[in-house]
Length: 338
Image (cartoon, rainbow, N blue to C red; front, side, top):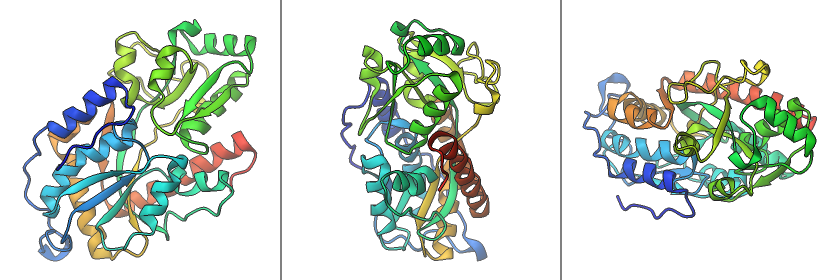
C-alpha cells in the first residue's frame, strides 16, 4: 500500500500515522462467515475506507489506518484509506453513500457527520440506518478540554473565570460546523457562563492552538496527547467518567463540578445502505478481528483509544444511542434537535 502524504498535520500526528503505517500487519487467519464459509469471498478489488478528515488528523484517520492492513489480511484484498476532508465531513459522507453497496467502499466516522452536519448546512440529513448500514463500533474515545498555556488557565474553574472576563474574545477550533468538535465546546462554554467564537477548520488546527491563535478545544486525546505530555498544551479535564492512565493527574469533568458534560464517544464503521447482509457480516468479522488483535489494540492504546469491534447489532444499538446523544447536545446548543 502506498503511503499517503500528510497534509498540514501536526508533527505528533505525523509520527503516529507513520508508526501505524510502517508497523507490520498482524498475521491472522481469515475470519469465518456464518455457515463456516471463509470471509475471503466478496472482495474482488481493493476496499476503501472513506474518512472525512485529512491524513494524520484525529482519531478517525488513525483508527482506519491501524485497522486497514489487518482487515486486508482477513478480506484478501488491500484496504486503503480515502481522505475526503472538508464541509464538516459532508463530502466524505456523500461519496460513501453514493458508492455501490457491494462492500468495496466503507465509511468510518460518527453519526454527527451523517445527520447533523447536513442539518446545519441547511440540507436534508442522511439516515444512518437507510442511507448507511452500521457494521461495527470502531473505538471508544476519551475526550479532553485542552488550552494554550498562554491563556493562563490550569483548571476548568480558571477557564470559566477567564472566559467571563474576556467573553467573546476566546475562541475554540473544530473540524466543522455541526460536528461534536463544535457542539461539545459550545456546550462547555455555555455551562461555564461565557461566549466563545467557533473557528471551523478544514484540516488540522494544532499549529494555531500551539501558537495561541486558538484559545482552547475539546477533542479526543489522540491528536493532542503528545503535546500535553510535553507541556506544550494544558489539559484541564477529561470528559470520561474515569481518569485515563495516560493523564492520571488530570481530573474528570465530573470532579470539576460539571458531571452533566461527562461522556465517552467513539466512531463507527458503516457500509452504504442496501449492502447485502452476507457482505456486512464479512466486513464486521474482518474489523472485529482487527480490533481484537493485540498489536492493533496496543498501538491505539498509546493514543488513548480503545478498540471495540463487536456484532452488527451492537453497532446498530450504539449508532442509535449516539444519535440521541447528539440530538440532545444540539438542542441545548442550538435550540433544536432535528
